[in-house]
Amino acid sequence: MSGPFCPLPVADEGVIERGHGGGGALTARLVEDVFLPAFGAAPSAPLHDGATLVVAGGRLAFTTDSFVVTPLEFPGGDIGALAVIGTVNDLAMCGARPLSLSAGFILEEGFAIAQLRRIAASMGRAAAAVGVDIVTGDTKVVERGKGDGVYITTAGIGLIPAEVAIGPAAVRPGDVVLVSGDLGRHGIAIMAAREGLGFEPPVESDLASLAPMVAELIEAGIAPHCLRDLTRGGLASALVEIATAAEVELRIEASAVPVSDAVRGASELLGLDPWYVANEGRLVAFVAAADAAPALDILRRHRDGAGAAMIGRVSAAAGRGRVLAETIGGLRVLDLMSGEQLPRIC
Image (tube, rainbow, N blue to C red; front, side):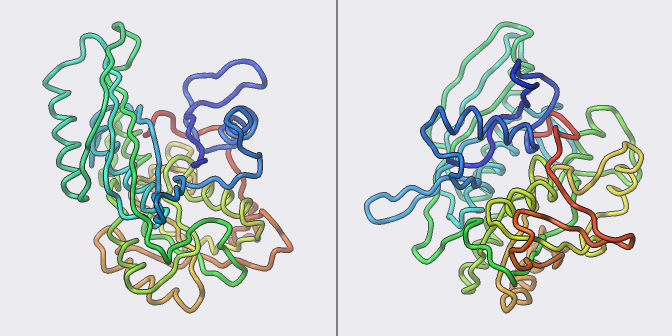
């Protein structure tokens, strides 16, 4: 089964509550307590950005995602481009070459056709830019006031090269942890657009396809042990999930984690932690120490990887499932948040 997919947390054993995003401890509870048992998967089943399917001797990556972002159009992107690129990035995190997508639309009665045309055109441009086809889909219309304009659900398939085996199970003590760029721009851009905040300098979403840089890593003979795009829950949640699944301890150097001055200032103003703020064009990579330097060189050759940095290492498994951030004041233990800092960001 692929990674966490429900954007709403549980309140005790009662009801799903609106107004929170996924990527936190409550989403993990939904997956572990509701979906895995219902779908016949063991609680210990590995969770990743996509599932691997063996078909006629080859391997396909398969993923699905839903997009409910508000506002629908934001600095640096819109829900259409987000749906395409977000799905392609999930396939890339499996090491796959993206092939085809499906798209389902839930449209609210009264939604403007002109805006729908813009969103569809944006999806088409994004798909062409990343080299995938949108080959099938579906459309439903719900009553006015029941759909918030438009929701989009996508699914994607991609081809995994024979030599690639990416996932938390491959993480080993001694591995180096890399990030592909500065953090938090997507979540801050969404918040600024939603609330009409005029940050100076303005913050744009980092929305971008990660597939080209992953493909280049693989073509160069670098075998990433694990990849994760830093969407809901940001860097911190991704690290905790991977450390838990791999049963290792991660030591992260806080001063090495790249955060722009604009995002840092906006986060301080809003009371947010940029390590937990969503990104839509950033990844974390676990590679062997010998591959760290060439991997960084490859990431930095891409426009969206120019700020790539080495931020930590995998230590011995004595502290299994633990992430420690080394700060000036000592060690900070990272954990999953009980909810999302910013709801409706993807």
